[in-house]
Amino acid sequence: MSLSGIKIEDSKQQEIEDLLISFIVLVFVFSNFEAKAILYVVPAVVTAFIFHELAHRQIARKYGYVAFYKRWDFGIILALGVAILTKLTTGHSWVFAALGAVYIYAPYQYWEDKEAYGKISLAGPLTNIIVGIVAGVISKYYLTPYTISWAVLRYTAVVNLWLAFFNLLPIPPLDGYKVLRWNTGYWAIAIGVAYLFRSIL
Image (cartoon, rainbow, N blue to C red; front, side, top):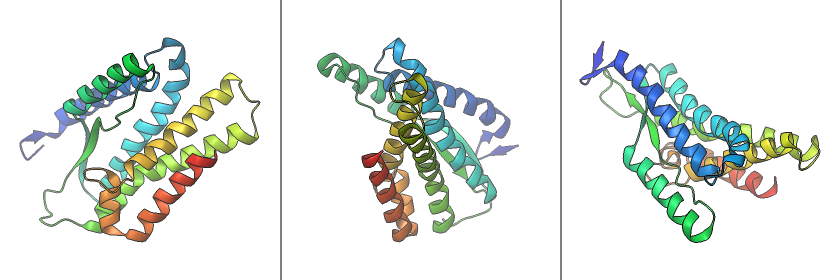
């Protein structure tokens, strides 16, 4: 099967490669290029990045769209460049998190369904918010501070809530722009919750 010149079978294989490359880059960036931090970073990136993108994809497919994650090579280069430069100059890597996106193909639909696109766009940050709140509450109220499990969940909460807030900024091509175009109320609630819990957990 092909769609707009793209073989779907090839796209599935490419999606795995693109997710893996983006994942590895994010692990390096979020770990500040320090091997000892990778233990804490991997669960955070799996939930914050992989779950986020798969949520977009699954909701898109529920609407009947063909959807795959594609890496953005310029975004990957920019993320590594910014992280390396800031690591060398400040000691801490700054995170640029736009490494790719779920691309949606609607071969039999010749108009943009703002509601569908809004819900698809909201699915990723909403997943981050849920994971972030759960991880944050568990680490804050049910685990002994400064243990390994506490640190893993604490970092998972921080990364998920930060990515939710970042992605909900109403700037194209971020998710927040599409959510805002669909429903201002849902966008305001989502970004408000992400900011609130990012501040208190």
